[in-house]
Length: 51
Image 1 (cartoon, rainbow, N blue to C red):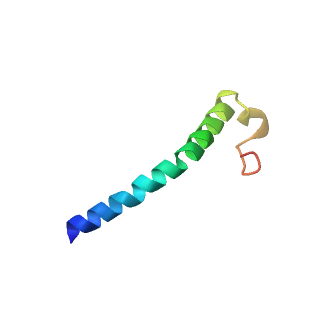
Image 2: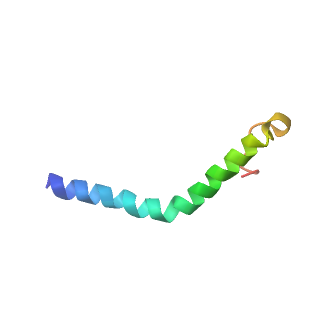
């Protein structure tokens, strides 16, 4: 039973990782660019309207 539960648990994260990886990579790149260009010095911390 424990083996079955572990396999089920691992499958949940495998499928989610593939679906969201593009979106997470774009979000990460957007934040990296924001801080590398030092936009936070003039605009402050990024808000949800920026993202």
